[in-house]
Length: 408
Ligand SMILES: [Zn+2]
Ligand SMILES: [Zn+2]
Image (cartoon, rainbow, N blue to C red; front, side):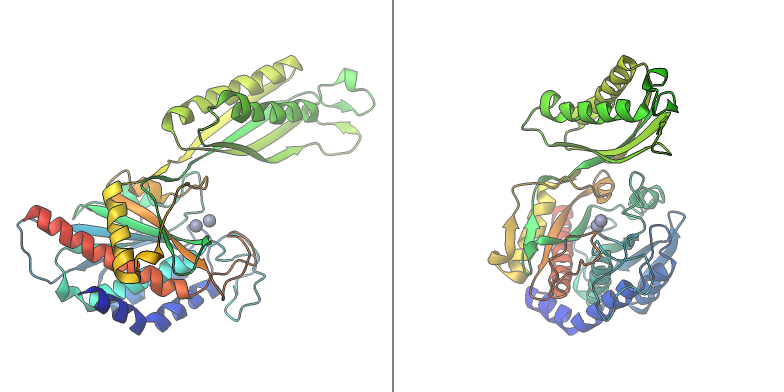
């Protein structure tokens, strides 16, 4: 299957991919609840003649396996490439006014996972129609709950041994990216997305009458000092050239305007890209929170939960994507990214088990909205669906070919 054939094959089914995307978009399901989405995916994969596993990882994961029927050149079980999409929506109320807008109130595909799922189905269909033109195995991972950090759905799939039998040599994924225009594909070796951890702090003071602060320990005042002091980790303790974010996104305390709050609860996220720095953060937060609290006669309890690791793209895998982009779309489509994102992605876990890469798929075009992802008005230009599908297919074919030559 040459590059022209890939382009033609994807064009032929482009309207189908769009229709799948719209169906999934209209019926969003939250993490671990992707029951209908998973059934939709599994039925299509079966109709393409793939071997299908459902309920993978104990919830709604789906795996499709496609064995190439092309001529084997080397010995052994052959190469194996895996492609991954995420299926979950967000608890966001849709405000796009689209004809295929969410029919499930308060739930929306606001991160483009509807597009990811539709493109992976497209790639599965194209490759299944051309299975005689390649040797080796392609696995299609449809995972639940990417948005459900700090655990996420990827680990459950990996624990269910999806990376084995046959062993996956390379794994790829994409994310729709509105900062890039339609027709562009962003690639980057090394860190692409950040480690994403959660920190919760409970400040215990002592409640009392709002008019008698000297008889109480005000948890609101203590917790406010802690929030402020924690910002000094970024500004004074971390190398200014090292990516780091600490955001306290939630602060809960108090019941009534004239009652001093006995306790306060803080909930925040920490983003890093270096494991060495990441390892020091729990102690830094604990030291500051406890020292500040003690100074005011209060107590602070810190609960630090490690989430998704840094997503680190393997250079050869990035090269495979870059070559595929150049071949199938032309050189002008390739964007070499200079900066990673501080966002997290549980695709990072797959990269702990095989070489691989995630790439960003430009989706800002005449038919997209201006809203960012996770916003009720988010929408992407559906022209991106054919672009992403072609890159997935071409990357897979190139990687299988290269692996075969290495084995032979
Ligand atoms: Zn998201
Ligand atoms: Zn996402």
